[in-house]
Structure formats: structure tokens, C-alpha cells
Length: 211
Image (cartoon, rainbow, N blue to C red):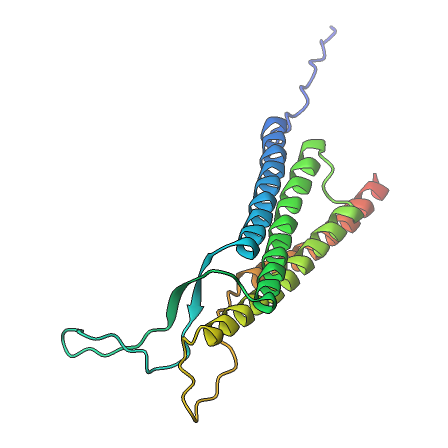
């Protein structure tokens, strides 16, 4: 008696991200990069060419509001000031700050584009991917940190120039730093992800050698 051999169907591999979804992410990240870059350039040009309204830090406790209820007291810590023409020094600092912040955004969008492309081609763990993720994390951490420092320096200098702090004898004031740790933390996390990519690439290479 002969038995017919039944063909065992190959296991269906389920994709985490479909090719259509990956293509959408690539297009969306490219469009976001172009849009944010255009807005950044427009903002820098508009700030240098005409009146600009900026939120400036007030580093003194003498600017106190009146008429508070319940016995409350307080002081202003920020001032929305409209400046007809920015001085060259603060204008340059703000321009550099905007450029560096945009560079950090572009680094994140470039990584999204890269990962979507790798997922679409089903080739993820490569030496180039690990290097680009690490470079993106480094650029994000550095550009985001330096950009915030330059922005704080420029706004503090403008607050001093417009007289928001009042220049009281005995008061020493350098600059107010409004720091967001998000870019630094995310950049550091991406550096760790780059290490994971490199480990995955080596593990994949060793596995292929055993087959």
C-alpha cells in the first residue's frame, strides 16, 4: 500500500510593518523634514527683517503683579516683548539656535525614514544602520543642547537690553537657562539603540554562519 505524502505548507511570515505602511512613513517623514525646514528658514528671515515678539526671561523679583487676592504674592518670570529690529548679536544667536534645533528634528526624521526603508526591504541589522542611528542620536543630543543654550543666551541678552530686569545695584545676572532634557535623553537612548543594532548585526552574522 502506498501512502500519499501531503505537502506541509510553509509557515506564513507575518510582517510587523507592511510595505505600504513603511512607504507612508517614508513619505511622511520626508514631507515633515521639508515643511519644518521651510518654516525654520522663514522664521529666521522674518525675525531678522521685521518686528518680532519673543518671550523673554525676567530675572528679578521686583517685577511683582498688583491686586492679587487671598493674600498671595508673586513676581513675573517672563515678558512677551515686541521688538521692532533685533540687534545683530542676539539675532545671530537666535538664528543659530533655530538652525541647531531644526538639525535635531531632521536627525529624528532621517532615522524614521531609514528605519521605514529598512523594514520595507526587510534588511534591518546592517553596519550602516547602526552607524546612522548612533550618528543621529549624537547629532540630536548635541544640537538640541547647544541650541537651547544659545536661545537662552539670546533671550536673556534681549531682556537685559530692553530693561526688563531693571539693573538694580547689587544684583548679579548672567542668563536664564530654560533647558529641556528631552533631546539629550532621546539622543542618549538612540546611542544605546545603535549598540543594539550592532549586537543584532553580529548575532545575525553568526547565525548565518551556522546555517
